[in-house]
Length: 384
Image: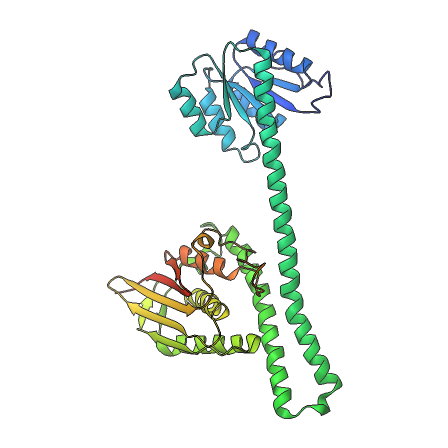
């Protein structure tokens, strides 16, 4: 088979339509390998140099690439680097064919993402064994990825259904009571139910808003029209504003859980490098979490201290421990230990808060031990 030949269907179908691309500049070696693989049941294409090999990789989309190292125009390392950065074919199993497999060569190839090496001359059974081994590993990887995606979609559907239906059911239930039996309730009872309807409406709106914000932040980049809204601006931290926000979140927590948690707020006034709406969103999410995961009756503390060039704001609560391993697992639609603790939310809040802090060159550190959890936010001061 020459380098310009059209794709050939395999003689045998025992390997299905497994596609292999051979990139090799020596005609005899290239054609011999192609002929043997065709006979063995693979669908084969070939390329006579690295540049042609890259083009055929993108067009043919092989299941595996066999590639020589020393070639004109583009050597094997350059081919591998290009394929690994290609996007669509970046995970394609890649095996080097070489007559100079020194330790240095092998290390260099493996660091760039090669899957294996075969030293020329090699026996055909050795080639088949190596190919099958790498194809099997790739099948396992794809199966594991498929399982992870299915699990994610299942969790997403489960969480989303719960988060949308719970407040809606609450709203419909109370509104039905007020519509059908309004004469049975006094003014205080009616106002209490209306307050719960309002709380459920706020919860549903927040779920929808967080879903939209998560999608926006995922796609946000410096060329975006929205970029400056989430990366620029300043805010003035003041005691009365933070106190008001924390009090409202404490009240909402009480409506949902019937738990009363006292709170303490001390804020040293300062101007920090984060737009007001972004700062408010960060504080809402993190302080709400502090109430949500606090033991009943324990205090939530929010303390802001002005340093030389930075501002440190610490949110502390007593209750469920935030484990060290959970920090690296912060992600959308992830709830920690949901099988043990029933909880509300899609797991977006903490991710959104951390993302906004990162975009504004601020920092979030989490410390949790013996039931005490502290979230430490570090901001850059404006005109310190």
